[in-house]
Amino acid sequence: MQIVQAPRVDRHLITACIDEIQARDPLIVPIDQPPPTHRMTVAMDDGQCVGVAWLHEQADCTRVDVRIRPTHRRRGIGKALLIKATEGHTDSLHAGCDAGQE
Image (cartoon, rainbow, N blue to C red; front, top):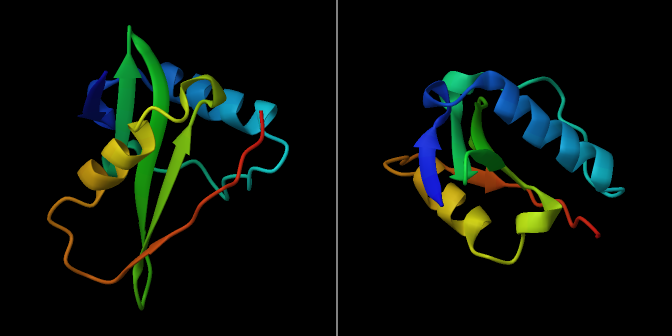
């Protein structure tokens, strides 16, 4: 598995990942709007996007969102994405978590 910045990944692979997560997880909070890829970190496994993380700058803090395909959960991918996405970030962070079911 590789953790990379989204501009290095085909946008269609990222969209397919997000779409699958939203379709297969009944408890997931829908994404308000598509996140900009220049602020996104992506987990790739065998040429497939298996997870995404991105930052939302807000007035009082920065929110970080992490989403992992159901088939790739419980492998440390979310943690790796969280670490990479927030690397060097010094402001207050708010991390949300969707308790997806499979």
